[in-house]
Image 1 (cartoon, rainbow, N blue to C red):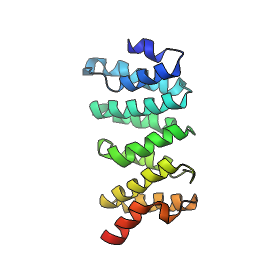
Image 2: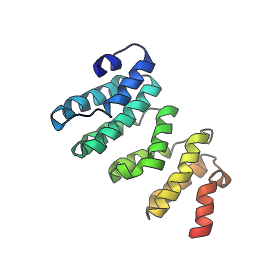
Image 3: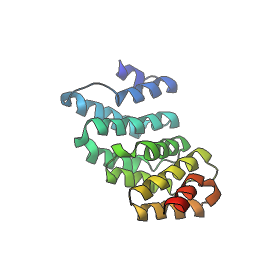
Image 4: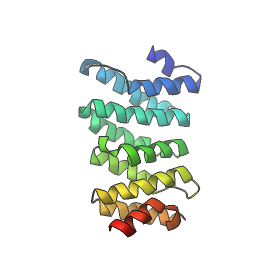
Length: 172
């Protein structure tokens, strides 16, 4: 069934199929087959919303099958080179609110992608605000400084990072 969804010409249907791939209740014997579908479609898919779903699916798959994190890391290095606001939005959302599921190597790849965000992307900047607080709370200061510097260089004002500013003034 999922095979038909991800091969459909309608991007909305493919999008649902990709999202489903990472949620399937499968055992270890079928995991490689599902991973291959995620990876191969991640390479060939051109629709930005579908790419965002593929990214989410890959990360959910890694959470379920941790032995695949090295392969997911290799996939992400190439995958996040895409210039897509939808993919950046998903990356920022995952890092801001679900980073506990990510190994440090995956977190680092995703954070690196967020260092190239335009100040026009308000939703992504809002997530970066939360990411900065999370990094400070986890004592990942060098990552927080790098992300903060790149964000400010991109033209984001400190006022736009109100949660981070509040936490910085009141707790550090």
